[in-house]
Length: 204
View 1 (cartoon, rainbow, N blue to C red):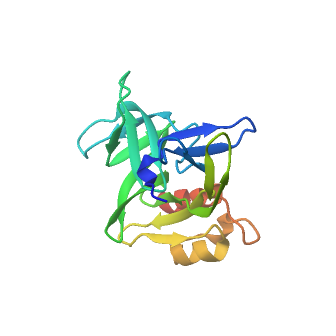
View 2 (cartoon, helix red, strand yellow; view 1 turned 90 degrees about the horizontal axis):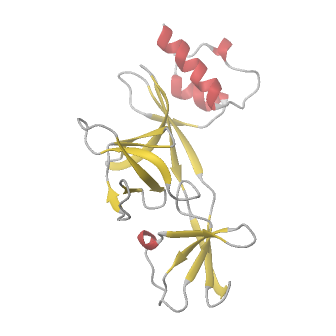
View 3 (cartoon, rainbow, N blue to C red; view 1 turned 60 degrees about the horizontal axis):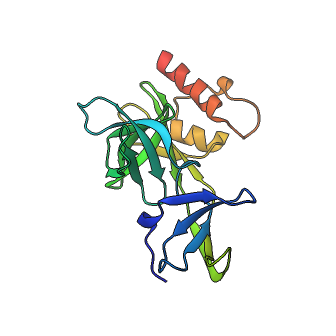
Protein backbone atom coordinates (compact mmCIF):
# COMPACT_ATOMS: atom_id res chain seq x y z
CA UNK A 1 0.00 0.00 0.00
CA UNK A 2 1.73 3.14 -1.21
CA UNK A 3 0.33 6.63 -0.87
CA UNK A 4 1.56 10.04 0.21
CA UNK A 5 -0.25 12.44 2.51
CA UNK A 6 0.58 15.20 0.01
CA UNK A 7 -1.83 13.44 -2.37
CA UNK A 8 -4.73 13.99 0.03
CA UNK A 9 -6.26 16.84 -1.93
CA UNK A 10 -9.81 15.48 -2.24
CA UNK A 11 -11.94 15.64 0.91
CA UNK A 12 -15.65 14.96 0.67
CA UNK A 13 -18.71 14.12 2.73
CA UNK A 14 -20.73 10.95 2.23
CA UNK A 15 -24.50 10.48 2.40
CA UNK A 16 -24.28 9.84 6.15
CA UNK A 17 -22.47 13.13 6.75
CA UNK A 18 -19.08 11.50 7.36
CA UNK A 19 -16.06 13.43 6.14
CA UNK A 20 -13.54 11.31 4.25
CA UNK A 21 -10.30 11.78 2.34
CA UNK A 22 -9.82 10.14 -1.02
CA UNK A 23 -6.52 8.76 -2.29
CA UNK A 24 -6.19 7.76 -5.91
CA UNK A 25 -4.83 4.32 -5.17
CA UNK A 26 -4.44 2.55 -8.49
CA UNK A 27 -7.07 4.77 -10.07
CA UNK A 28 -9.80 2.11 -10.26
CA UNK A 29 -9.92 1.17 -6.59
CA UNK A 30 -9.34 4.31 -4.52
CA UNK A 31 -8.48 4.29 -0.85
CA UNK A 32 -10.48 6.12 1.78
CA UNK A 33 -9.48 7.48 5.17
CA UNK A 34 -12.33 8.78 7.30
CA UNK A 35 -11.73 12.33 8.50
CA UNK A 36 -9.44 14.96 7.05
CA UNK A 37 -5.76 15.88 7.38
CA UNK A 38 -6.68 19.56 7.05
CA UNK A 39 -7.44 22.14 9.69
CA UNK A 40 -10.95 22.75 8.39
CA UNK A 41 -13.78 21.16 6.48
CA UNK A 42 -14.64 22.32 3.89
CA UNK A 43 -10.94 22.23 3.08
CA UNK A 44 -10.76 25.54 1.22
CA UNK A 45 -11.53 28.69 3.17
CA UNK A 46 -11.17 32.42 2.48
CA UNK A 47 -7.84 33.64 3.76
CA UNK A 48 -4.69 35.65 3.24
CA UNK A 49 -1.04 34.74 2.94
CA UNK A 50 2.20 36.65 3.61
CA UNK A 51 5.13 35.18 1.70
CA UNK A 52 8.00 37.22 3.20
CA UNK A 53 8.53 39.47 6.22
CA UNK A 54 8.31 42.65 4.14
CA UNK A 55 5.47 41.62 1.81
CA UNK A 56 1.79 42.43 2.33
CA UNK A 57 -0.95 39.93 3.05
CA UNK A 58 -2.43 38.65 -0.22
CA UNK A 59 -6.02 37.36 -0.40
CA UNK A 60 -6.47 33.75 -1.52
CA UNK A 61 -8.37 30.57 -0.95
CA UNK A 62 -6.34 28.65 1.59
CA UNK A 63 -6.06 25.15 3.01
CA UNK A 64 -3.78 24.16 5.89
CA UNK A 65 -2.72 20.51 5.97
CA UNK A 66 -1.98 19.87 9.64
CA UNK A 67 -0.53 16.42 8.95
CA UNK A 68 2.14 17.64 6.52
CA UNK A 69 2.44 21.24 7.81
CA UNK A 70 1.70 22.48 4.28
CA UNK A 71 -0.12 25.65 3.29
CA UNK A 72 -1.99 25.44 -0.03
CA UNK A 73 -3.29 28.50 -1.85
CA UNK A 74 -5.36 29.40 -4.90
CA UNK A 75 -5.27 33.00 -6.08
CA UNK A 76 -8.15 34.92 -7.67
CA UNK A 77 -10.03 32.71 -10.13
CA UNK A 78 -6.98 30.54 -10.81
CA UNK A 79 -7.69 26.90 -9.98
CA UNK A 80 -3.97 26.09 -9.76
CA UNK A 81 -2.98 24.93 -6.28
CA UNK A 82 0.29 26.35 -4.97
CA UNK A 83 2.15 24.77 -2.05
CA UNK A 84 3.74 27.66 -0.14
CA UNK A 85 5.91 28.27 2.91
CA UNK A 86 4.61 31.67 4.05
CA UNK A 87 5.84 33.53 7.10
CA UNK A 88 2.22 34.11 8.10
CA UNK A 89 -1.30 33.40 6.94
CA UNK A 90 -4.89 33.79 8.07
CA UNK A 91 -7.90 31.50 7.69
CA UNK A 92 -11.24 33.30 8.05
CA UNK A 93 -9.46 36.06 9.98
CA UNK A 94 -7.64 33.70 12.38
CA UNK A 95 -3.91 34.51 12.17
CA UNK A 96 -1.08 32.00 12.01
CA UNK A 97 2.66 32.61 12.10
CA UNK A 98 5.64 30.45 11.17
CA UNK A 99 8.07 29.79 13.99
CA UNK A 100 10.80 27.23 14.46
CA UNK A 101 10.35 24.32 16.85
CA UNK A 102 13.69 22.54 17.31
CA UNK A 103 14.82 24.00 14.01
CA UNK A 104 11.75 22.79 12.11
CA UNK A 105 9.35 25.46 10.77
CA UNK A 106 5.92 25.05 12.28
CA UNK A 107 2.74 27.11 12.12
CA UNK A 108 1.03 28.41 15.24
CA UNK A 109 -2.25 30.25 15.62
CA UNK A 110 -1.80 33.57 17.41
CA UNK A 111 -4.22 33.75 20.35
CA UNK A 112 -2.70 36.79 22.06
CA UNK A 113 0.08 39.13 21.00
CA UNK A 114 1.54 41.78 23.26
CA UNK A 115 4.78 41.81 25.22
CA UNK A 116 3.57 38.37 26.22
CA UNK A 117 2.45 36.10 23.42
CA UNK A 118 0.16 33.08 23.36
CA UNK A 119 0.12 30.52 20.55
CA UNK A 120 -1.81 27.39 19.78
CA UNK A 121 -0.27 24.59 17.73
CA UNK A 122 -2.15 21.75 16.07
CA UNK A 123 -1.27 18.19 15.22
CA UNK A 124 -3.32 15.37 13.80
CA UNK A 125 -2.60 11.65 13.78
CA UNK A 126 -4.00 8.81 11.78
CA UNK A 127 -4.49 5.11 12.33
CA UNK A 128 -4.53 2.45 9.62
CA UNK A 129 -6.78 -0.59 9.52
CA UNK A 130 -7.00 -3.71 7.39
CA UNK A 131 -8.60 -2.64 4.07
CA UNK A 132 -12.35 -3.14 4.02
CA UNK A 133 -15.10 -2.24 1.54
CA UNK A 134 -16.38 1.31 1.92
CA UNK A 135 -18.50 2.27 -1.08
CA UNK A 136 -18.54 1.20 -4.71
CA UNK A 137 -14.95 0.14 -5.46
CA UNK A 138 -13.34 2.14 -2.68
CA UNK A 139 -11.59 0.59 0.30
CA UNK A 140 -11.46 2.04 3.81
CA UNK A 141 -7.86 1.90 5.03
CA UNK A 142 -7.88 4.09 8.14
CA UNK A 143 -8.94 7.15 10.07
CA UNK A 144 -7.66 10.64 10.71
CA UNK A 145 -8.02 11.42 14.39
CA UNK A 146 -9.21 14.69 15.92
CA UNK A 147 -7.07 17.80 16.24
CA UNK A 148 -4.56 17.76 19.08
CA UNK A 149 -4.07 21.21 20.58
CA UNK A 150 -0.87 22.48 22.19
CA UNK A 151 -0.44 25.83 23.95
CA UNK A 152 2.75 27.87 23.94
CA UNK A 153 3.74 30.92 25.97
CA UNK A 154 6.42 33.42 25.00
CA UNK A 155 7.45 36.05 27.56
CA UNK A 156 10.01 38.78 26.84
CA UNK A 157 13.63 37.57 26.98
CA UNK A 158 12.50 34.00 27.65
CA UNK A 159 12.26 30.86 25.53
CA UNK A 160 8.89 29.66 24.32
CA UNK A 161 7.30 27.28 26.81
CA UNK A 162 4.54 24.78 26.31
CA UNK A 163 1.79 24.26 28.86
CA UNK A 164 -1.57 22.64 29.34
CA UNK A 165 -4.82 24.42 30.12
CA UNK A 166 -4.68 23.86 33.85
CA UNK A 167 -3.62 26.05 36.75
CA UNK A 168 -0.45 24.20 37.72
CA UNK A 169 0.96 23.88 34.21
CA UNK A 170 0.23 27.51 33.33
CA UNK A 171 1.76 28.84 36.55
CA UNK A 172 4.90 26.81 35.91
CA UNK A 173 5.19 28.37 32.46
CA UNK A 174 4.59 31.89 33.83
CA UNK A 175 6.94 31.57 36.80
CA UNK A 176 6.47 34.51 39.19
CA UNK A 177 4.71 36.60 36.52
CA UNK A 178 1.12 35.73 37.34
CA UNK A 179 -1.44 37.35 39.63
CA UNK A 180 -3.24 34.28 40.96
CA UNK A 181 -6.24 36.43 41.90
CA UNK A 182 -7.05 36.59 38.17
CA UNK A 183 -7.34 32.80 37.90
CA UNK A 184 -10.68 31.06 38.48
CA UNK A 185 -11.06 28.56 41.33
CA UNK A 186 -10.24 24.98 40.52
CA UNK A 187 -7.61 23.57 38.21
CA UNK A 188 -9.15 23.87 34.75
CA UNK A 189 -8.45 26.98 32.66
CA UNK A 190 -9.79 28.35 29.41
CA UNK A 191 -7.96 30.35 26.75
CA UNK A 192 -9.91 33.40 27.95
CA UNK A 193 -8.49 32.89 31.46
CA UNK A 194 -4.94 32.79 30.11
CA UNK A 195 -5.48 35.85 27.92
CA UNK A 196 -6.80 37.79 30.92
CA UNK A 197 -3.63 37.03 32.88
CA UNK A 198 -1.38 37.97 29.95
CA UNK A 199 -3.21 41.26 29.43
CA UNK A 200 -2.64 42.07 33.09
CA UNK A 201 1.03 41.12 32.70
CA UNK A 202 1.37 43.52 29.76
CA UNK A 203 -0.37 46.29 31.71
CA UNK A 204 2.37 46.20 34.33
